[in-house]
Amino acid sequence: MSSFKKFPLATLALASAFAAFASTPAAAAEGVRVRGTVVGINADTLTVKSRDGDNVAIKLNPGWKAGGIAKAHLADIKPGDFVGIASLPGAPGGDGALEVLIFPPAMRGTGEGSYGWDLKPNSTMTNGAVSEAVQSVEGTTVNVVYHGQSKKIVVTPATPIVTFAPAVNADVKPGAAVFVPASRADDGKLSTGQVVVGKDGVVPPM
Image (tube, rainbow, N blue to C red; front, side, top):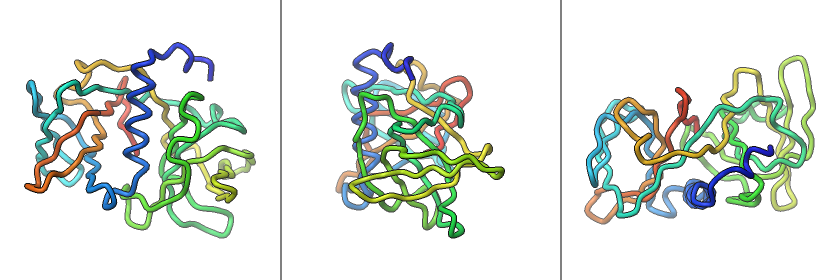
């Protein structure tokens, strides 16, 4: 996708940092992935109403940055693209995709592998290159290759498909949908240096 070449280097650096954190099992990094809607923000604290309905306070580290998520389309997934797909175990034909994140070429290889994910119970995240996209009546079966292994994942027309997009900190405001890869301190408090915000009404589906 040629539009990735227009991204500011800062945006790609932020997206890479986010993806590296998000691709690590949360327990191993003592990390928490907060998904929800911004209800308040000041100089150093972001408050998010999580998908569980709780208000979660997150300390914003000095120099924190926002990164954007924008809508993409099924037709944008091409053989050779590097993608991150959250999925659930499905029929013998392949897992069922919960969402697809298309990475810019500069981030190829980020978080490569397949591991547990907390989007839904029993879900996994698979980051890898698309070796083929087999069209079918029901949707598209994507074969994702990682570390010499492969996984077939079914992507339907209803599957949310997104990609990274430029954003500024001012985009993180009350009402905005966000995905926040945060760290939990020994005292239980959360902090982050990155906030991923949906652009043009997109809800980050990761």
